Length: 145
Image (cartoon, rainbow, N blue to C red; front, side, top):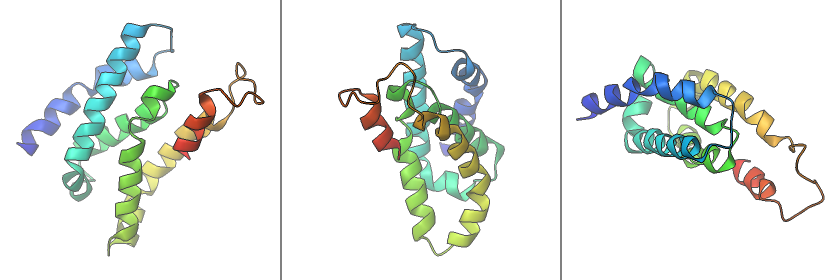
């Protein structure tokens, strides 16, 4: 079952990758599709968590990780926060296993890419008044940290 699921998920990744990299428009239908696919990739990664760690070097697992990085970097906060729990669980697992050094060295490139994608999310968008505490952007920023 696991061997059959991962190829099917990876099969849709090229179209999803292209969709994630298109300029963000106020297209609610597109945002709904991106949100649904982000949930599918995130929930797949959460369900296959142990398998993904064990097979972390495989091309299929690497593709799922890459898609999750793109989802996390997506400019819409409602979408980009979907995979945050996955990243927190991955970090927690790496830090509490007896193989921390091995896992860290294997995951450094992935975390480097993730952090580079998160940096722009920490800048206050020009459209937001930094003195307006009611804006939704600030709680989002706290959750991502």
